Length: 384
Image 1 (cartoon, rainbow, N blue to C red):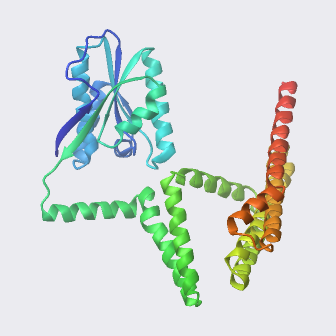
Image 2 (tube, rainbow, N blue to C red; image 1 turned 90 degrees about the vertical axis):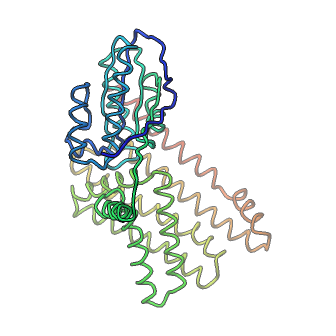
Image 3 (cartoon, rainbow, N blue to C red; image 1 turned 30 degrees about the vertical axis):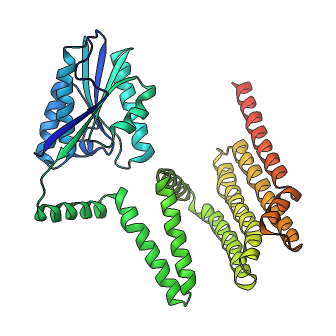
């Protein structure tokens, strides 16, 4: 097993004597221990010791084994300082992101609630997780200390090649990494190749850059979990009544393609300025109209046939989408009129926003949606 050098922050070399409770949390955000041993939450010194030995045997090159042993050492150190000390290995999720953070918080909160009030939490991580865990667990209990475990290894040339091969294999087999390492580049290459075969070399470069940029935004702002959850929910909706929902999806896709086509035609024939006007006037409103048609066909109609339609929620969404589409349409129409005056671009945008009813439509749509929700809530409370 690799040697471990422990860098400790906030945990003093000599702790003051306390008669309270202490909880040592060994953080495993990516849930490697849970995947290997089948348990994402392991509580108790003996159970953690057994888990550390089993995990070290199964995965001797993983830093989590060293982290667990460091947690056990800290447990023994705190045992003489507190009246009640507990240790637990707590996993997050293989998907990382928001799901892992939520799981970590809920699982630690459950352990703290069983121990009682006034628990000092000591966090042990492998040098990259403990700071984030401290922020996540701030509302669960009093974070009294953080300990980082840095694994030191001597690697020769052959070991370096083996390490690179290991991470390449992980990038291919691990769904969390394969999407970014293989999925996004594969999509870029495929789209670029198809456009190049059709003769659109310049468009291929622009669309490839757009895909890469969107992927960076999604993963940079940790939106991948939200996108994945939305897609899963969307697929589940299609499975329930595909004969109707596919019709709504077809209408939505048709309107979206129509809006994109109008913007592209404007760009090719009249340039970027005309394309921006077309985007505001046609593409965005048509896309929102497509979403509205999908809601009407796939949620309201299907919900009515099954007797479980939530009219208030759907009406609120339709109101917001409808007035937002009107706001963008009016903004685009105003921008088109202002552009014909020959003013500078910045002045064009400011004048277009000022002369349009963009803000008014957004306020009205938001107000109607909120009013619908309030009326629905009041009716539910009255029935109860």
